[in-house]
Length: 529
Image (cartoon, rainbow, N blue to C red; front, top):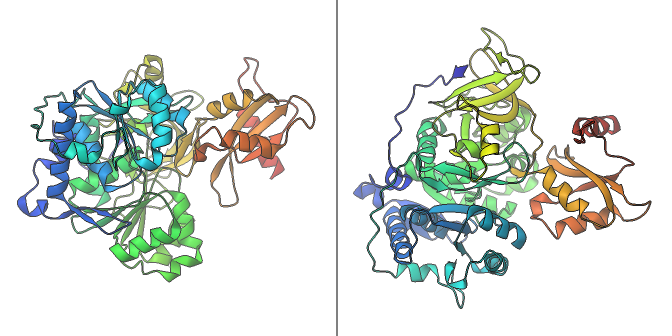
């Protein structure tokens, strides 16, 4: 077992609202909390806290309380922060929904989470309303933040004169958020994260990340994703920095916002690093305000990290985690330039880790020198989830009797405790930081009249990005074209889940028990490369 090289931190026993906002000073209340990247409009911490409290009061007035689950389907706009923390302040639970989801996917999450309210914005209302109706949520419980006929709006909530509810919760057991994750395999499951989980992860990571009040932090990473939720909506606010929101990625707008708003700390996923390293448009903007870029959500190569750092003249860090760990478990600290950028750094405080052999399950010891052999990474700490909602079996398969979360990722560790992720034993595909469960795409494709059998794996595209590829056994020769199948899938899933390559084969390799032999398909890819 190995732990953090940093001393343990004290984790306050309080709600995420109290942890983030209860100790704001008068001077801090007048600092900028959020800037709308599209318009430049600022929101102070004083206004943000006022809006959070009014949202909480308005929801409580309408019967929202502990035990209520509220869906939040919204891009990165300033109102997201007020509503997200307002829901938590009311004692309710937030389930954040991917803004790219189809109505069917939204409906499934609403039903699986037990949500009885949904908050969204007018551009997403058509799909949101269809999903809400299918899930039994009436229009008076579908809040359209920017307003729509027949629905309450954010302005309606903020107009309340009701008292802020007096909420008493057990921070260690009260579920604050329910993001959905496929975990190590299978259909997405609701990850129960307590207030203490969220508080702990910010407290564990804040000193290593190094965001300070003077920073203007670009909030491009989606708030609905645990990465954006923890490092932007929570950590950046705790550090009294200013968040600069960006509703969706566009390279020109991304560069403009950094330049015009003088963003200094930028959190990204690896595909953006590719653009920063290679795209000629980067040279047309003044990015000199950026002192640090931190990449997470998917592996970043050391060579790409160095290319970005050299081009922009900034430091670049990498982190690692998973939704089930709130999410951060490892990162390269801001003051550790000696740590290789193709690693994920060191274990954060208050966590225990171990590597176990994939063959024997035995622990792989921390080496006295050099680098260990590869093994599955296990992590344990106060940021590890309570479990999967309504799925004890999956919980027990993921968190063992000793409290270790089995990540499904294969790693090595050196004598200094620096961890490198080298492979994944799990089958999830990570496309631009989003998780894609092959089983979901396989089940969908099997429902197509011309598909007899299918297997989906992740393959590398020309830029080194992992993409879903489907190996398909058609019902007959020339029964259907690859382009037709890809278009058919695209109409039924969120954009990041689209199958991007199809190869027709005669038979899907399977074990005697019927399990798809993905390793054989990967070997086929290597042989054909």
